[in-house]
Image 1 (cartoon, rainbow, N blue to C red):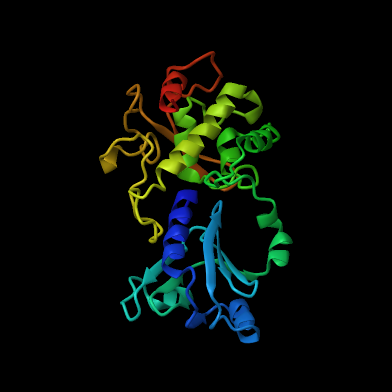
Image 2 (tube, rainbow, N blue to C red):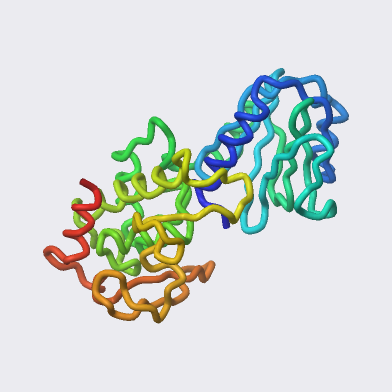
Length: 293
């Protein structure tokens, strides 16, 4: 599933290409979108902005209409020049928004809806989003309060819950927990204030580092090298994610993995650096402090 950094980069790329341009062509295979297009045509409207909130992307058109999309597991946005060959099959296309200079194609997007600001505020899932980690006005205290309120949840599950803190996915939940020396299966209620602050600050740091201008164009959902270690080689880019059985980059102990939560998402961790019981100060926590400056 694309995470918040991927959606942020995609929205930024689409905004740079399309913002301020008039729609010259609109196409969709989704009946609900086509019904709106017939009633209130998209062609002729100006694309005012493309932005993201957590893992949601919103394309704002003139006249108060916006296109809200969520990629879930399989969706992606591509951008092409007119008449440029698409890199995915046409039968995977769900929506096309074209201007004179660029064509934005949404492939296999499972959630795509037209909204006004009023109808968007009434949409339960979107309305209940927690603070977006990559937002310029991200409120760490609000995020901490929401996480604390989920005291009975396992921390990795809480970090995945978009109603608590928006933008993290399966990669970052494991990476953030490792960087702070927190076992991902501990209950939120067992965390100290120091550990909670470390998790939130590390989430900010990791995602922000992966949306810099040199972190990949982000327009193809699963490309671009994601780094949390700060190391330049692609194979050294992550601390624990998808490294089951490989030696921990800190202590050499084999990385473990197991499914977690109702959705059975796989979590990766180091049992030595991330003990199951809280301790006064682990070596991983000390290193995390150095990482966070």
